[in-house]
Image (cartoon, rainbow, N blue to C red; front, side, top):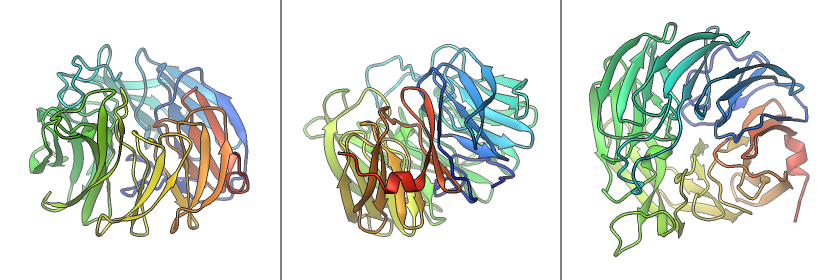
Length: 397
């Protein structure tokens, strides 16, 4: 069950956060604060932050709290594990403009990358940033890279927090994550200057920039995934004749693929429409066995899309919007929705294998699987461990 390191969002480029093992357990631990972060698990210890600024270390078998560290602002990034450190991003989602696609800056109050001792929770280093550190960083070619809510690309020494460089790209990140793509490069996305970017980790220099329309939004909310040749994510666009997205108005969810080496668009397809939420406009994708799985912030659906063509393979209605990520294990896709349900769907057909009402909404706090157990943080602040078989074998109405 041990994992040596966890150096990017949801373990790897496909965001299928599955740790092998035999763990079969059930527990529920309350943190007292909304959870927007995906948990991380190393050596039997689970790490997850909440929006009250608390970082929890929990025993993954029992849910017992091992230690809690506290900072003033929310901890919404997924924790990284680097040697004996837990690295998290502190920052809130406040934007100083009413236009989701053209923020002046994301983040008020303290914004920083912070490292804690993973065994004791003691502060090891803290590096302030210009904008929110909600996006999840990654360690690429020995450099901790991050894209903040003020549009800066930051490169740090992960052992000490010493800032090696900061480069402004004029594109604000929100809940995205840095995606390592080889050759010492990483991909990120942002709004203001609506684009996906491929950058060198060493120095932050540009490899390519793939622009999106000015009226699009949610680009900086989506953590991209990759199969090594393409990069995938989603965003929202206005409904004509509107030229910009407005919170509460009708918008369309779109999903795209870019060539990872050049940034050239491969496909861009529209899904359903719905009312634009105030935050977390994009869904978190999963890539598995040639299919791209993602929900919707606009409507209660889970989709499977052919990664090569962009064609819809299937869609299944849920009990609430599905903003968080998913995991795929043995031909079954597991995820939570804002209606408070955990789902198990057949990965090839979308058939409902099971659904379990948990009486707490699941927003962007995304599940991981450890052994035979799903672990997820909820919108009400619970961290929940549920055996996979309990989700598969339950059919709640």
